[in-house]
Length: 530
Image (cartoon, rainbow, N blue to C red):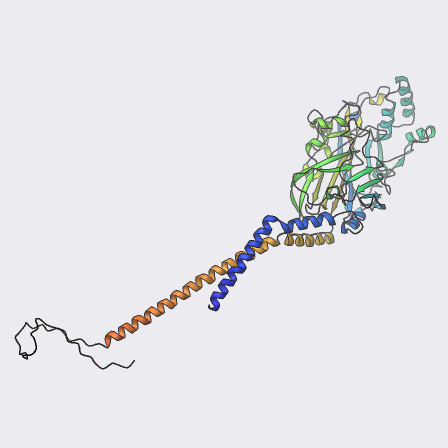
C-alpha cells in the first residue's frame, strides 16, 4: 500500500469519526445542556457568585430625569375651559442605590436587604437650575385637604374654604422646581400641623425620599430554583398587599427590576414589583435589539397593563372601591398614598384613552420618548439598558363648599413625569461580550467538530479524485509504451511480395510434388539492436 493510499484511508477514518461524534453531540445538545446547567448554578445571589457583588453595588450609573408640566392658563381652566401646559426639563439627578444590611436567611436560599436611594444633581445633563427655575402647577396640599373634607358636611367644608381663602391659598401655586421636587414648608399644612402634629408641614414630590429606602425586601437567591433568582419573597414582611379589591391584584410578583433569571425566552412574561406604584406589572417581548455590541431582548408593558376592566377583566381588582374604575391608561394609587387623589400613567398619557390626552392642550404622547422598556441579555438575564417612565397626575374636580372649584371640569391633571434610565457601562459590556463569546464557542463546539469533519470530507474527495487521475495517467503511459514496442517488432520483420505473374509451368524436381498457386516466402533478417 502506497503512502497516498494510507493518507486517503486515514483521512476517511478521521472524517467519519468527526462527523459521527459531532452530529451525535449536536443532536444530544450535550455542551449546550452543560452550559445551561452551569449558568443555573452560577447565576445566584450567593456570596460566592460573581453576580452577587454587581447586585449589591450596581455598576451602571442610573439617572433620574424629571420633567414638569408648567400651567400656562390657570384662569381659563378655573373658568371651565381647557388647561394648557408646557413641558420643561429635564432636571437630571444621578441615583445611587447600594444594597445595605444584606443578610442571608434559610441556609442561603433567601436574602434580606434594604435599598436606600440617594440623588445628586447633574447640571450638565439638565435644562436649567432647579433652585432658580419657577413653575406653576397644581397646589397638591390644597387639593389633598379638599379631598379629605369631601366626606364631611357642606357647612364644615364652607368654613374651611373661607379660612383657606383668608390665607391666600389658590388652586395653583408658583414655586421653584427644587421646592416642588424636594420640599418646602407649606402655609396650609403648617396650620394643619399645629392642630394635628402627625401631619407633616412640609410638602414635596420627593420629600424624605433622598437617602431613604422603599421598604424591607427579602429576595430568593435562586439556590433552589434558578427561575426564582432575584424574585421578591416578602416586602415589609408581606407576601401580598391588602389595598386592592382582588387577591390577584394584591399579589407581589417578580423581581424589583434589577435582576432576572438566566435563559430568558421570547414567549415568557416578566414580572416586576413597583413599590412606588403599589402593584406588580408584567412585561412582554417586543423585539431583538443590540446595545454596545451585545444582543438583547426588549421587554415592555403591553397595552393590557393599564387597560380598562371592561376590556381586560383581570384589572377589575385595581378598582377601589370595587367597581369604581378609571379609563384605560391610568391607575389611581391614592389607596396606598394617603392624601391627594394621585393617579399614575405613562408620560403624556401614552397608551391611555384619548379623552385624557384631549382634555389638556400641550400633550404629545409617542413611543420613542414615553415607552417604558427593559433590554435584557437572554443568556444571563442581566439588564443591559432600562428606561422606566411614569407620570404623576392628580384628579381635579368640583368640590361643594369650595367656590374656587365650581366651574372646573373634572380632569386628570398632569404634574410631572420621570425618566429613570440606566445603560451598562463600557467595562461591564466588555466583560459581558467576552463571557458570551466563551459561552457561544463552548455551546457550538459540536458544530465546530461537524465543520472539521466536512472539511476533511472535502479533502478526502480531492485526494481520491487525484489518486484516480494518477492511476489513469499511469495506465495511459503503459499503453503507449506497449504500442511503441509492438510497432518496433513489426518493423524488424521482412515480407516477400506475392507474385503478380500468371501461373507458369516450372521445372520441378521429380521427387517434389507440384503446388498449385502462389505462396509467400518469409525469410528472416538479422535482428536490430534495441
